[in-house]
Image 1 (cartoon, one colour):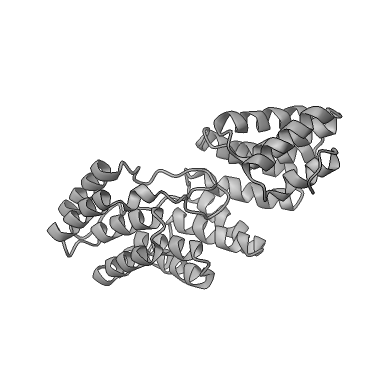
Image 2 (tube, rainbow, N blue to C red):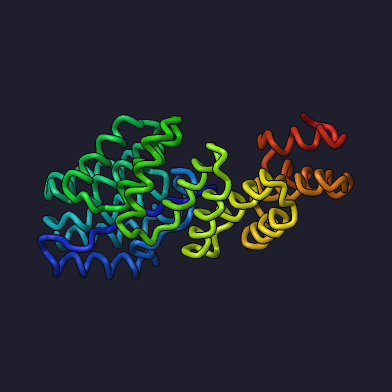
Length: 288
């Protein structure tokens, strides 16, 4: 499943208390500041531990010590969001924005929660607000681009990802997601270039390897595709997509038994993953 990180502010009106909040966050949760993973979708990986009584109590103590510091609410809202407590997350981001209406990171974080709640217009509005305050905020361009891409608005998504890239983003998602649009447009060489850049920025993420492998398949380059799919499996063996992609190469090579095994493994990981079910049906392993 794809992961999107929340973002603390890089500065606030109360620098001292913001630093205190960040230190408490690192100690209590071990969160990674502005670190991101290279993903194609806008999905929060739910981690109930983030919403444990101990973690929330630690963050609440920070808020109680600094009740007018919006960063504390932003941090706790992020913890609630990762725990799947979306309503509580929204409450904290709302409070942060009441204290500091120009807190663009809180707008982007609230947008992420809205995206995961299926409230796409609200997400777009919040990304727009973040960009109005900080037109150079690459995170908001990438987030808004994802909303557009998932809605099939590829031109708007492409423009947002390209803007983030023009701003010098080091977030591989911008390249990965633009690569997906190039791929959809059958501009496979450009897609491969973008996936390769995404890999250079996030070498431990399997998603861009899968993306690049699919473009290699489109160019009938089975060997490079196979290498990418295998590496994706090495990085994370629990993704049905990677196994189904590996099976596709086996199928194209005429290695039916190996294709069946890989398709079955993909279906075992995700019984609803239709490409694996369809592939298994094609090679005579049942399902469909």
